[in-house]
Image (cartoon, rainbow, N blue to C red):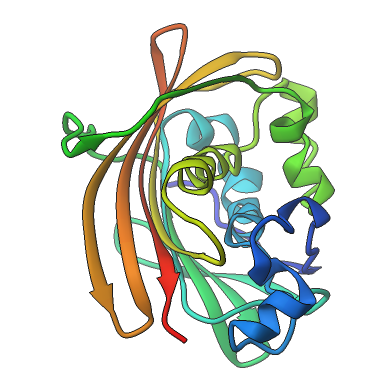
Length: 238
């Protein structure tokens, strides 16, 4: 049986590097209808990975999966409790603000192989996993030593790269990451050069605004390391 997951808590960090999206600033968050600066969904995801990575280590980072859904905003400096609960084939980790569940993340040690990507091909991104990406989790306060001791890239990098696709090609102004289904296909190391290929597979209207769904594939030297179905509100209703 896999090792049980343990709870963890942190005061949410709103990184200044996310200020290019107005909702992550005090003024922009209030203009979008929130009570202040909203902490990036990828930061909350970094926190949600902590119980699984601490319990399952490299096995999960190499071949595990995570499905994260964001249900309520987390504001700067709010205390977030990461609380695991048992499931049948996975473990659900909740990010709680007191009695409110702000996000859920279903984590498992395996997954079905991803299908071939479909949809409208976007411009690929080629970049190096330098400190901008590798140091993200630590800057946000997720300090699990595994990543430094084993020289492994933190899994928050994968949805962060998917966000980069949205920020550079799909949005202009405030937007909100709402959901990701992430499959780990291999490990990456600091300094690796990655290719990020993305395909827009859906775009639709919801009560909150226009949403887009993108299939993102990330590889190192032709070796797949992650596949992500990434959804965001790309236009917010006023």
